[in-house]
Each structure stands twice: as structure tokens, then as C-alpha cells.
Image (tube, rainbow over all chains, first blue to last red; front, side):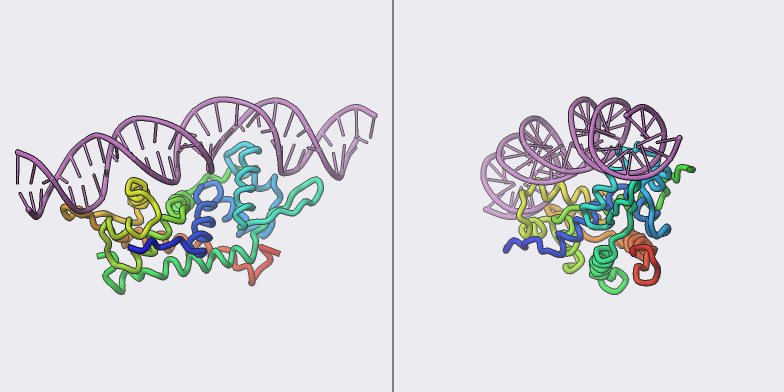
Amino acid sequence: MAKTAIDEKQQRLARYAKALGHPIRVAIMNFLAEQDTCFFGEIHERLPIAKATASQHLKELKEAGLIQGEIMPPKVKYCINRNNWQEAKNLFSDFFGKCQCSKNGCCE
Amino acid sequence: MAKTAIDEKQQRLARYAKALGHPIRVAIMNFLAEQDTCFFGEIHERLPIAKATASQHLKELKEAGLIQGEIMPPKVKYCINRNNWQEAKNLFSDFFGKCQCSKNGCCE
DNA sequence: AAATCTGTTCGCAAAATTACGAACAATATT
DNA sequence: AATATTGTTCGTAATTTTGCGAACAGATTT
């Protein structure tokens, strides 16, 4: 009966998930996770998309909090946002931990 | 230089992430994970959205493979898709495991 | 057979997403 | 100062997403 309000955790998980909801953005995150830091150009030259589009995807990831950018004229260095990455990691871990399919009947 | 093609894992991760990229859908998944199984009505009455909208979100989750529906006239029972849930869990786990921020300099 | 219950689908509207080229701004180089 | 480099922003177009009421379909009950 009672409407279950959407709580903060769900909102934040959804926000991170949305940011990761595009293959290009997943590829960017994977690249950043391997490379430690990257300049825009290094990221862009790996991707099969226009410069403007790459910049837009990076903006999305930044606004979601998953990465941060630092201006190092004339370049821009991007890297993973440690704190939010950890938060996202925990949120997803909790989320997927809620259903232990092999241990109960939730998915029979 | 070489364009890094988007691989299958990235595609699938993005697909699952996209499905989880809405607070309502996260709430539905949480509910299903706790309740074992649910009829549409039970899900809908918890959510602050219209019946048609709830049905649409469930369709999204089903098409992404995270849940499955079974018709039990006149009701419809939804539950988590075990195999795909496990796959998603593994994909996200690998993804977040790629950057151990505290162990290297990836996010300095 | 008519009415009811359950949930999906249809049709629509508003908003957000995706993608690109061109223009732009800021710095560095010549 | 003129030119080149680096990356963002603007303007535009096509597509997708979100949300809802109304209509609908299928099964059950009266």
C-alpha cells in the first residue's frame, strides 16, 4: 500500500549507473583505470567518435562524479575521482549482494 | 593511435548499467531482491508512478535481461533472472576491480 | 453473458540523449 | 604579432526516454 519513497542510495546508484550506461563511457573508464592519468587527446584518439562527442561524454562522467579534470595548459588531464569511485563501488557491491540467487529462492 | 574498438564486455556492462540508470528501476530491483517473487500489482502499489509507467520500466528491465516475467492468469509474476544477474554482478565486480585507487596512482 | 480484475499496449507530449561540424577561447610556438 | 595546438561550447538534427490516460486483451467471477 504505502508508496516506498525512492531513497538516497537508490538515487545515487541510479546516477552512477546512468553515467555508465553508454559503451563509450565504459571504455573511457576502463582506459582511465589502466592508464592512471590521461590527457584528453589520448582518450579521444582511442575512440571512434568525434572530438566534440568525446568531450561531451567526459563531461557526463565528470558531472556524475566518476572522473575529474584538471587543466594543464594547453592540455586537460582527466582521472578517476577516488572518493566517488569508491562510493559507486560500494553501492554496486551492496546492490548485487542483496540477492544471493544461489542461496535462496529469489530467482526460482 | 589505433582506435580501441568497444568490446563485448563493455557493451554488456553498459547495457546493464543503462537499465539500472533510473531510480525507479533500482527500487524495483531492490524490491525483487528482497521479496523473492512479486506480482505486478505488488510492485506497482509501492511505486509513485502510474500503472502504464511501471509496466514500461519492468519491460526495460526484462529486455535488459535483469528480470523475467511469468504469466499466472490473471496475474504476472516477476523475478530476477539468475543467470544474467550473476553476469551483471561479475561484470561490475571486474569493472570496479580494475582501479584499486588506494593501491596505485590512478586517481592521484 | 455481463461485469470485474489484472496488466499490457497505444497514442501522445515533453524532455533528455547522442552525435557532429563549426566556431571559439586559451595557451604555446614561430 | 601571426600561427598552431588543445579542448570546450554552440547550434542543429535525429533518436530515445519518460510519463500518463485511455483503450485493450485475457482470464475469472457473478
